[in-house]
Length: 118
Image (cartoon, rainbow, N blue to C red; front, side):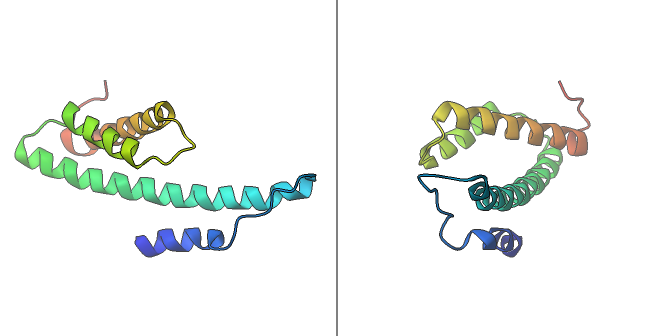
């Protein structure tokens, strides 16, 4: 998995494209290619995160634990807040990760807990 993410990031290994003072439409291409590579890497990481959550869902089911544990969600959010160097503000990080957590929790419920989505 790590190698797959690294492979997806390979196009980003060099210096970022120039951002000229007098850009042309041609200057957009390299930046869009960079975003496409980042999007692929993010997708791989989100799917790996979901796989990890699926294992946790399986373990929770075996242990008779609930899917939703509010204190754990706060730990996850604190973790990303403390690691955020910007430029995304904390409010944006919260919204993004709340959505990621919601989707992961829904998958966990469907796959391992036989609970309907709220």
